[in-house]
Length: 318
Image (cartoon, rainbow, N blue to C red; front, side, top):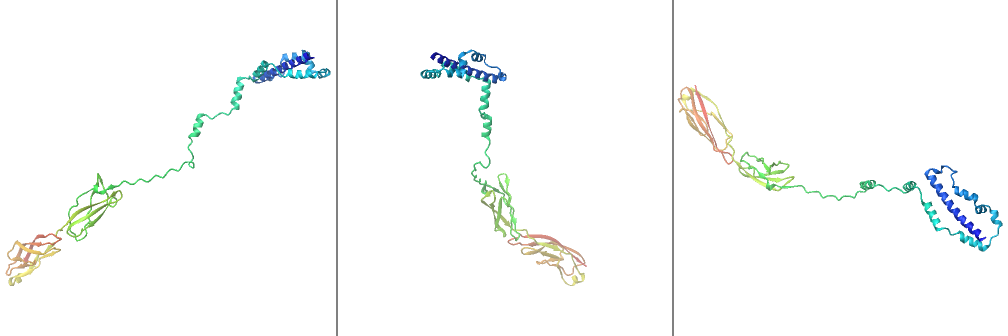
């Protein structure tokens, strides 16, 4: 009885191994395309099931139930049925784990999520942050404008200005290096003592990019005497000239600055001129035309120069 039970245990172990092998083969055929035929089964397993009496007894529950079993033997059978051949179990494990390399690689590639490529990662990392995420920049301090000292500029000399009786405001030429500065943009002008004869001052004050002040002087000198002389030809009656000396005003002087004087330089002896510019015809002068040159002078004053003019005087006696 014990031998029969042991034999049954061995057969069960063999059947388990064969079943595992059959399942592995069926799985491999299914993955490789051989699982399309449902009738493809293990011939060894079918032969064993058909010929082995132990297997037939195992499949027939009535026969196993009709035979009494010893309790001790059942315990032994239980203990003997549990251990299996280590080599066979390792073989089964190794065979069950072995799969088609292509299918395992495909399964691995499908099951594991693909990591982003380095280019995608670099691209995602190189994306600049949005304007809202950009850190605020510190305000830059405004740079001071470049300024130039006007004391280093050159001012052209101002020629003498003639007295006019009004304030004199001559223009000036200011250059800084090769640049000619512009009045009102680069500098302003202020004048002092610029009306009377003497030395006047012009103050040049920098503006815009130019700083500082320069002073330049110029002279106001006497102006030309504006005296004008107008000469008129005069006619004297002969009859009157026979009886007495005749006086006529042939010269008109205007705008003279300073004392005016008259002096005969040459001409007819019958004609004379007074200090006030009055022409006299000598008594008894005969009919005809008489001529005389007269020098007229204006002495000038503090603001005007002296002036002298020579004019020709003509007197007709008839």
